[in-house]
Image (cartoon, rainbow, N blue to C red; front, top):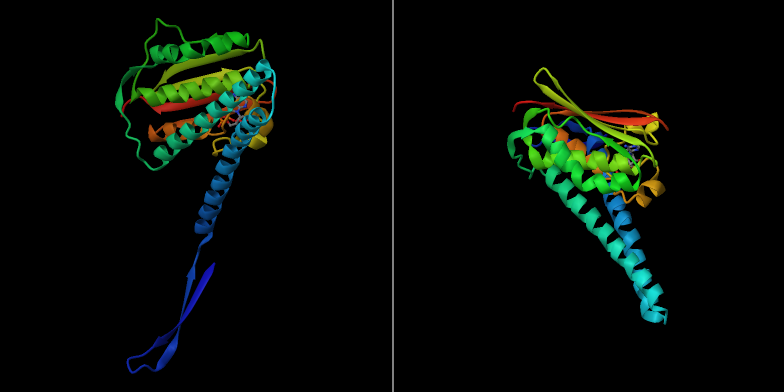
Length: 258
Ligand code: ADP
């Protein structure tokens, strides 16, 4: 609570009393805290790869080494720069969405077709990890009015998480169904799952259940925050159901029409 006190005068400047103003600044303080955490998180996330790039470049510059070792170090520098790139484009994306700069381009889309098209570039990642991917039957057609690129982004983020957090030999299934005026799709994996205590925080920027592991998987901790915003923008909802070491299922429920 913020308290302001000021004297209160009458017409001939005689003192009449005091005015006490009480402002509830809980929300403001909270926002300030969120902003401060965000800046700290961003700095930390960027600093890690930058430190690595700098360290390896310095080592190459200051030491004689076999060509092979040098190439190995340059590869690390390349990969870390790539990671920086991903973090920065995720951040830009998120800030665009949060500033409401994002205009949805609503059109009629065939969701089953879109799912197949979106999954295509990820197929190699699935087969590298010996994961089975089940997609809805191509013969079906499920139509909805939505922003094609944004729905594709939601799918990519959910599918990449499914790949990242499912051990070799597992299974990932995408399902679609029509409900009255709604279209529901889900991505379910047989992966490591999410502890119940983390479910509430999952859609926060930079939140990760296991920071070290997520970073190893190449995650930025922004994927689900972006997904949540995009689902909200479409007037939909997203829910998670998970049992640790058994499965995780994300379900997106969207209005079929605008
Ligand atoms: P990241 O880039 O770290 O994957 P996300 O925002 O996409 O960030 O996800 C946040 C965290 O939620 C992840 O770090 C991971 O701990 C957890 N998570 C997301 N998807 C899954 C999943 N399918 N199975 C298990 N854990 C998941």
